[in-house]
Length: 470
Image (cartoon, rainbow, N blue to C red):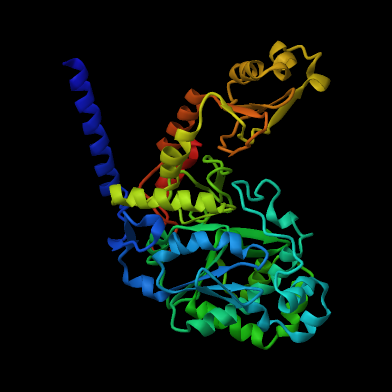
C-alpha cells in the first residue's frame, strides 16, 4: 500500500507540473491541426501541423548546392516542409529532386563575375556536364562537420560557390512570392521547428523592417548566421533588393573579399540601417549532439527557452528531431523548449559507459608521454584503461564526462552528447549523477519568459535573478 500511495503522488506531481508550466509560462503553442499523412514513411500516423493564419504569409527558402542536394534534400520533403504551405529550393543548378523543382539562383550574379572569378569553376562544370565527373555524393552520416566549423572549410569548391548565392537569393525569393510577410532562409543541414517559428514570428509586427537571426561578427559587421536560419520581413527584403540593384558591382566586390555570403547580406542590411534582431537562444548554430545545454550568450541562457532551429544536423538527425517534435505535440499543448530536447531526447542516450562512441570530451587529455610522472596518481594512471580514466573524472568534482581511446584519456567539465563511432575503439562515459545535477541547476534558473521578441518587455527583476544564480 505505501508503494501504491507513493506512485499516485508521483503521477499527480507530474500532471500538476505540466499544468503549472502551461498556465504560468504562457507557453501555449499555436493551435494544432491533424493532417492525414500520405507519405509511405508515415502511413499509419497523423501529421500534426500548426493551424495558424500566419503560415500562409511565410515563405521558406532552402538554400543548397548540387554537391549535396541529392543526399540532404529528401529528408526535408518528408518531414518539416510537409507542414509548410509555401517554400522553394535554391541551388547552383536547375534540377528536380523527389518531384520538387530546384532553381538555379546564380543567374542573379553578373555574367562578368561568373566568367572571370575562380570561385565559379564548379558552377561552369555543373552547367556544362551536370554532376558527371564529380565525386559521388557521400552518404551523410551523423557528424556533419560541426567540430571543424564551417567557416574554416573554405577550400571546398561547393563552399566557395555558396557565398555568391545570398544576395541574388533575395531577388529570386521575392520574385517567387512578393506577397509574403516573412521570408525564412535555411540550409540543407538546418532543422526548422515550424510550429515554434510561427509562434515566434507572431510576436513581431510584419509591417516593420526586421532582420532576425543568430548573431555573428566578421570584423565590425554583425549578421545573421545562415546555418542557424534567418528571417527578413517583406519591407526589409524590398530595402535589400533596392539597395543592391543600384550597387551590384560594389557588393559583388565585397563578396569576393569575404569568405561567407551571409556577411555580405549583413553588409547590405547595415547600409540600409536595418539592425539584426538577435534570435539567440531560439536559433542555434549547432545540433543537440554538439550543443552545450549550459551555454549562455548576451545575458541569455539556452536551457529555458523555446527552440526554433538547430544546425549541422544530418538527415538521420533531422528525421529524429521531426519524429520527436511530432510526438511532443501529440502529448503536450505547451511550447517545445531546449530543455525538453535535452531531457527527453538526449538524456536517455547517455550512460556510464558506451562503446564506439565519442562524447567529444576535450577539456584535458592525459597520456603516458605527458603524465606518467605526474604527482597525482589519478592523472598518472588515467591513460591505462577506461576504468582508470573514469576514476580520474570521478576524482575531479567539476568533471562531467570522459572518453578513452588507445592510451588516451580525455575529460570535460561541459556536457555534450557526441556521436557514435562504429567499429572504432573509443569509449565514452558520463558521471550520471552530475549530469542530473547540472540539468536541475539549469531548470532552477527558468522564469516565466518564453521569447526574446519585441512584444515582451524585459523583466529586469527576473533577469537579475538569473544572473545571481549563474
